[in-house]
Image (cartoon, rainbow, N blue to C red):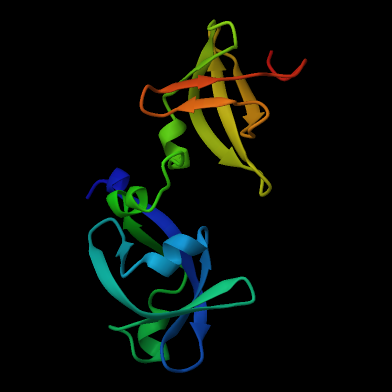
Length: 170
């Protein structure tokens, strides 16, 4: 089982009611709405669950899985993340959209086409994604991934153009 084959779209945080509905924190409402099957993955196995019904309540998705009919069955999965296939996630993207993890390995250039560095990791500070860019001398710059700084993102060619403000890069 290769983790690159799956993308997490949420986490079962608790039960909702007694009929086995799951309270799920989610990253993308569109992925939750469009998913028909999700996967629970651990080191040894993969369990497939079929989404029967989804509704949204107080910033959570309430999901009824066909395979789970009572609270005790659901409690085994409390705290587990739910996944969809990466292929399915990419099929849902619009033309100019991409998976944030596809930025890793992209080479970053300035507007004069001079190499600045390479994206080595991505983190999040709860308001925006942050790109870790390892510059040409090995130092890591952490830059907010916002349109103003990154006017060109070409995932297919693994190339990003940065338009930094003064002091943003070392």
